[in-house]
Image (cartoon, rainbow, N blue to C red; front, top):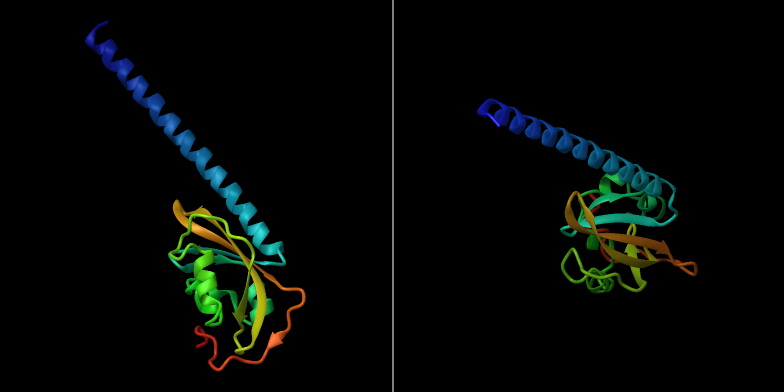
Length: 163
């Protein structure tokens, strides 16, 4: 095979590889958009609090906190996850999440107290599961209101994130 023919073959191989990379990128983007769409739908319809926690901060959540805790969704995003729980619940939440975010295991259901924006506390159940978000380790945290839950008197301090 002559030099020109070899050069043409190498160029054809490079072109084919570039096309495959673009096709793979398109497939990955499509898969991501599909998963993102599923996640957004799940967040919208769930009657539980769903949070994606990364490096200890809430990166995504649904409107559960607004309904139960009186927070706006924007008030919750990029806030330290454990700051929404009363002082006695924080060690339980940290332990359930493996101490440092992100953890490495799924936990059993833990009963903890959520601090509402008005300072009242509500008993909820917490379950966490390691996941990946934005190609980084994260935690999927799910909060469910305890059926026999009653609202407790306001805690001595207002919520840590009230502003």
